[in-house]
Image (cartoon, rainbow, N blue to C red):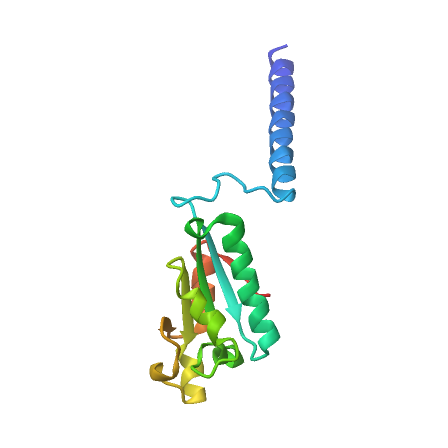
Length: 156
């Protein structure tokens, strides 16, 4: 009898947990933030990749960043935009999206990171970059490290 009670209890608890998990999944699927809610103390950590010299692609990435900041609030996110390969052109003083990149520097929650390896290959120095852009030794490695630290990786 005791064994039957334990089995019944375990089954009921299992169904209860499954119901809770299902409700949380449904909530997330509807676009609502999962606990903990995005806040200053629990910001969403987002690592964006920019690897294209195509201005349309550059604008798409910037639009994604602006949309996320609008959705969560700029104080509730931390965003690292890592540019490497042809995407480094977005950070140059002659960038086709110069004004939009410069507008991102106004947000303390957004970091603009340029790949040093790409800079070397393109013979670009820090003087060639827009103000506010920081240099990281290797863009791809930076993305790997951010993901390992729990950041969400986004490559539009």
